[in-house]
Image 1 (cartoon, rainbow, N blue to C red):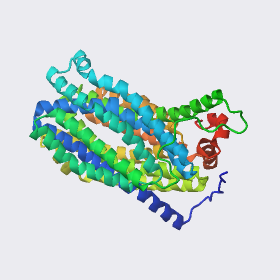
Image 2 (cartoon, rainbow, N blue to C red):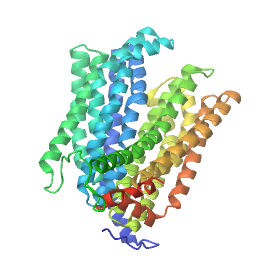
Image 3 (cartoon, rainbow, N blue to C red):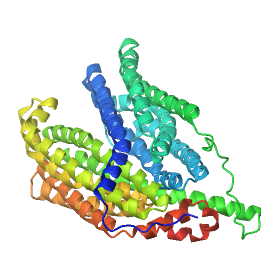
Image 4 (cartoon, helix red, strand yellow):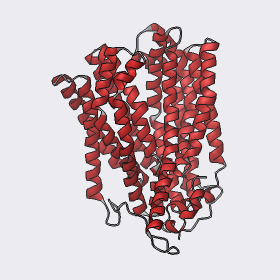
Length: 493
């Protein structure tokens, strides 16, 4: 049985430095991967722009549609396995981690089927809402040729989380970098040399993801340790000793284990999608302002800016989720609390970097995207507001990682729902349309949402009972888990 440590009230400086090293070792490769993913998206947009304005418009519509309906859903659902895997590695229950990986892959593959059906039928859907036929046709082509990418992402997302949950992030970074280095020549060859155009760009994307997947699978196969199973049969867990073995008991245990994964995956997905979709709402709302061309162009710059700034919070959030999950699974609540404090400190520092970039460097950054004076002027007005949003966004994103690591994603989803849609959206509509502040008003709506979100989520983190969370982790993935499944209702409280 795991023993729960007596946590100190105040950590020593050597403990803080040690935790900082562990978190940096996990987080630095993730930050690099996020930055590389950002550059990969810029390559896609740049290649579409080279093909022509029609191709750029169709590709932009397709990328937005696939992000909203597909990639955000798969990414969010995969995050449900984070607490299970990180806590399982902490408690050395390797078979539980392997089972969680396989179940998550199977779940994402099943979810990909209706997503693929939706992508196939994009053209009639867009024409039904009176989108431009030529743009819609190109967007539909991109979506159809992107369907194999759903398979790649259904396996890639869980594999990345699995490796990250045991702190193995450097191989993840190198595998991603190699595939991205090959991505540009593959894209140029398919889109321009073979003259496949937009479909060629879609094909190059899933080829790059399959390359990454191949590299990761090879790494896992050739570096695995003898006691770490690559495959655990998806059979019922061992019957608890106090229960007689029977098919009904085995089926009940299997259903409960799947139920725990799904009840962690759905809130994780909602937490990701609710925030992601808000930016799409802001883009759509910008199209209804008095100067839609200027507002939409500025919106594109804002989204590119937030995507770049999001690389650091993503890295900190992922690393603290792993650290908190590992320590709770190992029965060390004091270490989990220390990881939380260090992560929030790092988040505050990185948010200051975002604020400086969007205030001091707002003109130079704006000129990277446009020379249009109207767009540039509006961008210089709203970028400092986005910097203030980052002061709240970075601690908020980090705290979401803390909640995932402690198997409480439902709290984050609830906070995102009320903060972005019950606070941010009304403020944005009133300021942007009723008070006629335009796109600046929409950005203040985002700021209101981020403030409400960070205050709420930091309050939850501050009030966390870490000893209780460690006991819940023991019930969730401890090696005696099977005798404790009747207590599963405590896990997700």
